Image 1: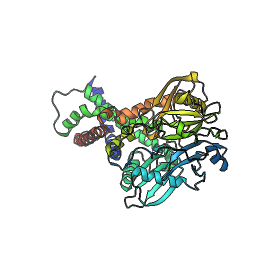
Image 2 (image 1 turned 180 degrees about the vertical axis):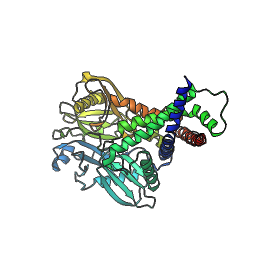
Image 3 (image 1 turned 60 degrees about the vertical axis):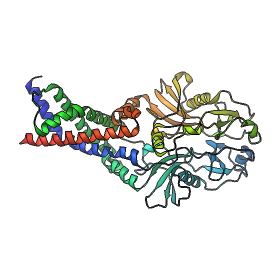
Image 4 (image 1 turned 135 degrees about the horizontal axis):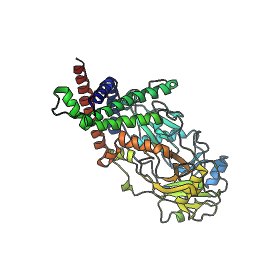
Length: 493
């Protein structure tokens, strides 16, 4: 490489320095807030949803309860664990409050959805007697409850405490969508303002995305030119002072800076315009009138050798109603201490075991089972034949293209070829399309996971992963931004 090209490369690097170092300072330091949130932010104290043995011996027939309430169709019907007893939960529409009925008397419990949300919030945070200041239904994403949480609608349960403790609860699956307090809210707000520029108005989404992409792109170009200088411009003697330290740091830190900046630009270009709607889709309503099998009176015989942890009513593709009986996992399989719960939130541990199906009209075992039900749901939600499916698997842990933001396990994953070219995730417990990831988005998902969040260190534990990332970012800010600016000023003289 001739000296003219080397000089041009050096000039380019110095010309980009001010903006590139500003980008490194801004996004590097604000990026440190995210590992702080995942490591020290308030979290749930209990991992699994409430559990209580099901006993339908004294229950009224489900058809009688539904008929008395005038319910002929519903999207989801299941038994849930209430505060003092198990209840029948009915979802007639995804966007309307769910209805609840006493299993033994059939009486409806009016306006019980927020009450159930409050019970779940107390359970997950292990504050059974805490006073609640307010329960608010949330139907849109916001800075307080961003789209990363995926689930809508939810209830925001605000506790009457000075620390501002609150929980966001999704009652359809008894899931804790998010938890926050004053400290987490302040840190999260700072992260959003500095890292994603949420302070900009919605009307300025395109300028926001372009500005972030441009500034982080300058950092990417500056790091690339720095790498080229390290490779092409050899020095026989180490430069003195800040310039020497800057160059030495470059050998170690330029690749991490390239990883952060490249994945950052890739991410903001592909996902800079966040979808403000939940992607979760419930199955169409099913006709619930043909429930002739008296499951309540046959309960002792059905559960003689079984421990049933969940019961829901589903339908196969022929319209036949089926009772889905969920079986529990061994208790030792669930995390209990704070660190194990924090890890499980991100890695995922399925809270329920396998399932069996009974025909709701005859009581006979539906032998096709959970895998077949998943196939039928995938076909229902996509409208595509099974021949389009390339691979099927049961997902029991988060990762890759189905991460902790979905807050739903286990699910079945279907990899489709033409014409969909996507991975589809369905939940057989309720018939829900939990998520869909198009193949064209998967490279960016891998990039953001591996190059931006450094998930390749996950095997060392999340704490080690966060510590390594933070150390690298701090060194990059000090050794590359700090010493780089100092050497640039001296070169200017």
